[in-house]
Amino acid sequence: GENVEQHPSTLSVQEGDSAVIKCTYSDSASNYFPWYKQELGKGPQLIIDIRSNVGEKKDQRIAVTLNKTAKHFSLHITETQPEDSAVYFCAASTAMYSGGGADGLTFGKGTHLIIQP
Amino acid sequence: AAGVIQSPRHLIKEKRETATLKCYPIPRHDTVYWYQQGPGQDPQFLISFYEKMQSDKGSIPDRFSAQQFSDYHSELNMSSLELGDSALYFCASSLEGGDTYEQYFGPGTRLTVT
Image 1 (tube, rainbow over the protein chains, first blue to last red):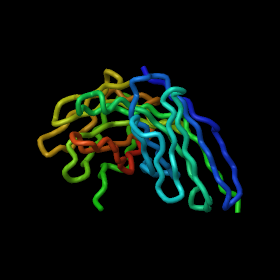
Image 2: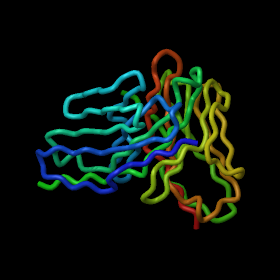
Image 3: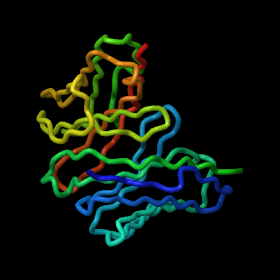
């Protein structure tokens, strides 16, 4: 089955600086890579995703890059703000190849992002 | 915008009891997923349903079963509860078909087994 590794486990950055979280996956059939933000006591919130036919995607201060050859993808957050503090999870699935079926996500272990004021 | 609804939000059970968790997907979503998240851990996929049929199966114990009903809501039934079943249980929903793969998570049900 799929295995997703995520680094670092904890990341502390100064407010206004950039943060980068990296993930690698093992299954070359995986083709959908979402990122979730989870605050304490809440459900994971989808913040951005990327599919295997795209190398990069950006949404305001958040961007994701995908390197299919190396099987890794990264989340970039620029101009970090205190409200960015949370646990971030990367995930992978083979949703596209399933013919429309509902594939479960395999998550990384999470990164605790701390924004220092 | 309407989100995924889960009930109950908190549940306390004793060992060997049974529990039923309910999930109401976002309107028009036809697919539901169940995940289990232990303290300080990542969500683990349990099972999913598309158009009332089981679609994908993860690490769901044999003591657990689930189904999706005609109105697309889903229930996760857990029997012979063990202390290790204490966790957050999330339901997510998506709209299959077309070019949509996004899974949107509910607020979760916190299950405590004593």
